[in-house]
Image 1 (tube, rainbow, N blue to C red):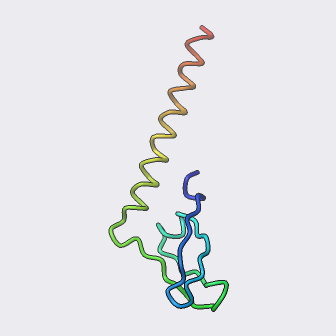
Image 2: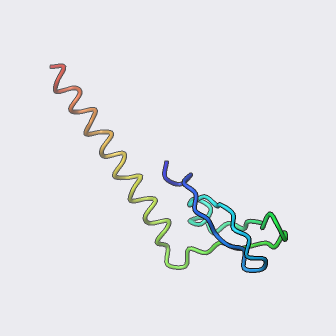
Image 3: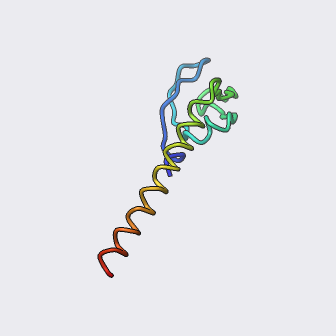
Length: 76
């Protein structure tokens, strides 16, 4: 879910801004600047993006399960 969220980054070469998905950062993918074609290697040096995405996904699954249980309790 959240991994498809986008943030803006700036090209270190030409300074043009463009969007990348959080999943791309977590996976440390390479992206190409749309202006100057420089290849940029995205870094999640401390793993915080990956850990945050995993944590949010886990909590959303927990919330979904809790909501299902509430729905079942109301029907009984």
